[in-house]
Image 1: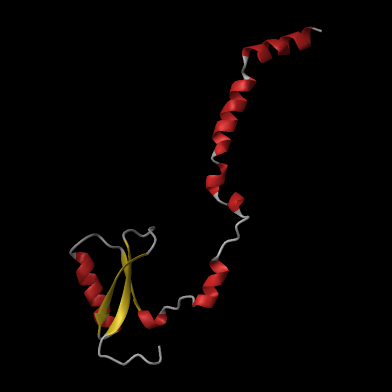
Image 2: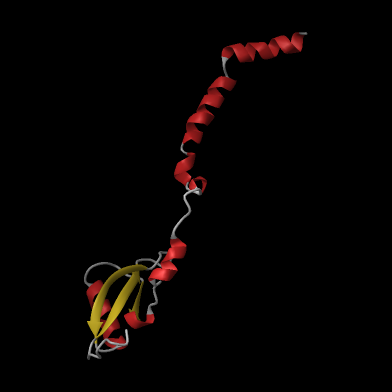
Length: 117
């Protein structure tokens, strides 16, 4: 970002949360001359629209993202399907089948025969 030209306005990212226990969510970006004005602009925008418990205003230059080389570590290996919960969808059906089998009439009657021997 060394070749960016300096301007009067800086770009800020606005985050907010609706309740004390809610998570912060990114809302929008805005241009402002300084941090204080960015906060005032963010408050004005939200106070008209919805209830807000807290607002964060962050200068975009203070946010660091991953570069292309660092993003490579985010790629998942193909053999890790067992870590995804969608891979266990069959268990409900399997459990139901197990429960039905366990309470089958023939099996219940066979238990009584084993005890009478």
